[in-house]
Image (cartoon, rainbow, N blue to C red; front, side, top):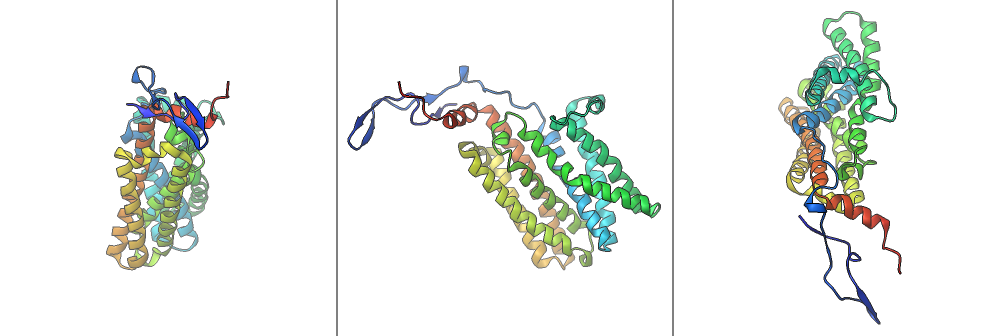
Length: 321
C-alpha cells in the first residue's frame, strides 16, 4: 500500500511571482519491502478488547453500586456489586487466556513497577478483585455489613482506575492510533465504562431506583462523543483508522447505540421495557467502542504510512541548503 507524502517530500520547485510551481510529480511513500514499520500487537481482539470492556464495566459499576448504597437503592446496589464481580472475573480470565498461562499473571505481581502500566494494572486487579468479591458476597448474604461497607468503598475507590488504566496501557505502546490519542483515550474509556455501567444498572434496577443510571447514561453519551471528536482532531491523518474499515463501522455503531440508549433511557426510563432496551443498547455501544478502538490501533500499526508520515510532518520541512 502506498500513500502520498506531504507536499515537500521528493519535489523540486521554482519560484515565480505568484508562488511555487510543481516541476516533478509528488513522491509516494513506500516502506522497506512494503512491510510495517512497527510490529502490530499480537493481542487477540476477543481477549484484549473484551478485557478492556469488561474491566470498564466492573470499575464503573462499583462506583454506581457505592452511590446506590449511600442513597438507599439497595436492590440496584446489590445487583451492580454482583455484576462488577462477574465482569472483573471474566476480564481477568480474558487477560490470562491471552497471556497463555495463568502463572504469567502471577509473575507480574512479583514486582510493582510504577512506570509500567501493565504492572500497575495487574496490582490494581489484584486489589480490586477481592474487594469487589467481598462487597458482592456480603450484599448477597446480608452478613458482615461493616465488612461489606468497607469492601464497597474500596472497590469504588479503585474502580475508576480499573476502568481507565487500559487506556494508558494502550497509549503507552508505539501504535499510532493509540499513542497519538494518549490524552483523550482515558476520557473515552471512562465515558465508555460509565455507559456500560449505566446500561447494566438500567437492565437490573427496578424503575423506582433507575434515576441515577438514566442521568449517568446521558452524561456518558455526551462525554463519549466529545472524547472521540477530540481524539480525531489530535490524530490528524491517523484519524482515518477511526473512520474507515472495521473500526469505522464499530465506532459508528457505538455512537448510534450509546446515544440511542441514553435517549431511550432518559425519555422512557420510567417504563421497564424502555429502561431494559436503553440499557442493552448502552452495553452494546460500550462494547463496540472498545472493539472499535482496538481495531483502529491494529489498522494503524499495519500501515507504515501512519507511523512515518505524521513524524515527518511534526519534524517540519528540511533545512534549506
